[in-house]
Image (cartoon, rainbow, N blue to C red; front, side):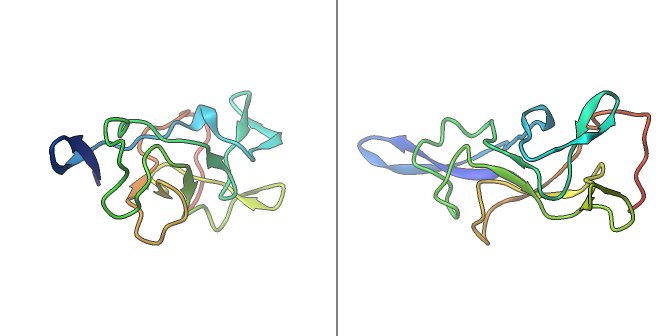
Length: 121
């Protein structure tokens, strides 16, 4: 789903413009360092990406969230596979972009970070 942000267009009012909103797993915080997958820390439901990319031009914020380049959190994770007591995020897991606003754009983990370990949903 695109992230519709307000782009300044002086002297006219801001123009609503759709942008991609992308978060990358290599920047995740609150990962599990004791369980490694392909020599990388495990991303869990509690992990967060401090900021997203793609909507930088929408400097006046999102139409709904009023945020741009906000943090990305995960809303879905495996109910069967855990690392240190936390549910592991799987490929296609739902994510939330631009913070904790209930109206933020929903996203999904769509690019596999590795192809060796498969996690049950």
